[in-house]
Image (cartoon, rainbow, N blue to C red; front, side, top):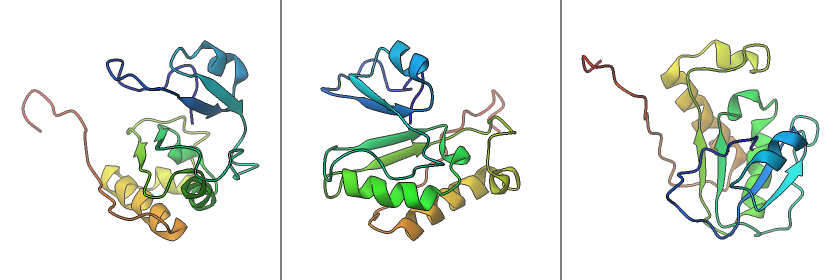
Length: 141
């Protein structure tokens, strides 16, 4: 799930990066993408890729907008090579009118638990690790 920025570390080279997003103009401007697909996963959660096409996947600041995240994650496991990882990252900010209702009812720890539950319900995901990478304040809080 991508837009004009992929949030991939600039120092890491990738042989291929395919982005899937809602906005063609934004995807075209993304310098990290080698290819891209325009698709709304809320209206069509099946990914337009062959089985076992990709080594890994990332969902960055987008899981909170998926209306059927379990279906998307289930299909994502189909397009990844067996054992291929998915990294799902999110922040405490979102577009309030676009995020699903349950997202608004939870705190940061609740978001971690919800995403874990999505993965568990989707199946085919093991060795899940939930990490809070939130920056700490100068006072250590």
